[in-house]
Length: 85
Image (cartoon, rainbow, N blue to C red; front, top):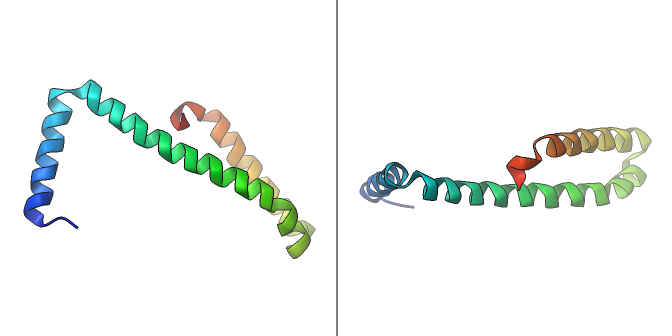
């Protein structure tokens, strides 16, 4: 945790960087966004792998709901795939 003074300095440095070199700042922002996308993709894969176990453990209705939510998630990830890469 940063002190208030350090937080203020960090925000000032960030603001100056954003204003002086917007291309560099955009590349950093895209890298962070890509990391989040990879985690979301990994989570989706793990949940798809867990679908059969959830169906057996909690019943067909739960499995069907689980699958419908995962299909919607997969469709949204495909639709907005440029944001994740």
